[in-house]
Image (cartoon, rainbow, N blue to C red; front, side, top):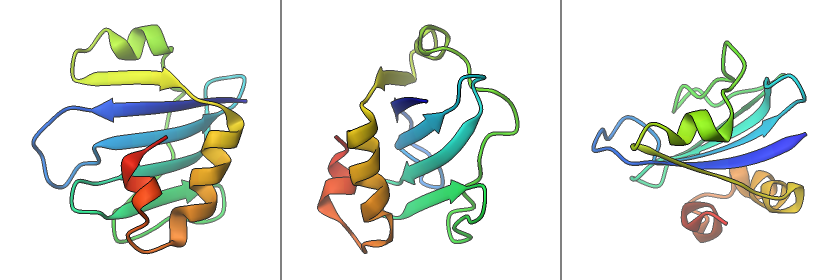
Length: 103
């Protein structure tokens, strides 16, 4: 598994500003967190997803970090499994400052 954080630079209030993904060896997301500017947190995995934010796993494999970073609105970095797990555990915590700060 790989773990990534992507900062999305934009001004669309209905879109997340931080995305965290757990990605399998074929590029498919297995878990995802989305953090919005207004403090909403969305998450999805194979068995559940938040409906408030309409967060879903990607319908196709994710591109490489190099490909993602080729678009200037995206700033991807690899994170550790421990960093992702720490955030995943907090996903149900209302207004968790750690989630909104990222890793």
